[in-house]
Image (cartoon, rainbow, N blue to C red; front, side):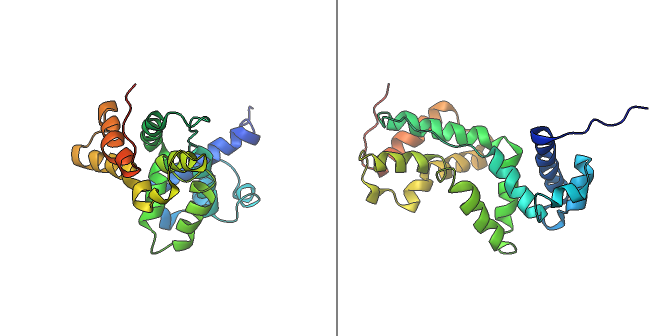
Length: 197
């Protein structure tokens, strides 16, 4: 009689990460339990507790494992291109289940403020902030931009306009619209003129 193959290491971790995301989609953050995750992953609850003290910790781990890290040009010689690529990376990540998980956590900000704090300190900040902010701060660090111009509003312009487009149209921005966001909003905010290539 054949038994179920025992999964270990990265294979088990991938299954558990997918299980917590699927469970979150089905029951919501408030009803997320180790029992439900273990059942969905077809593994023992005790094995989950050996690595994660709570379902929220497991969820953060799953989000962090899939959260992308923007890598600007090392020479900092293509600000426009790096900003466009950062927005493309954001759109690509928005299709991943962890993007929905982030939205679920942020929607529960008042109920779970500590979880939101952990999302920023353990996921976003280690990845170098978020998308266009990563690019802008990289260029400031190498002396290509005035760091005083990179305010919280400027950090969020690109992502905010991408999300507004999605809300207004129900569609992802086209490459042309991403270029327009960079050329007409982000670059002028940091006193840079678009240079099309």
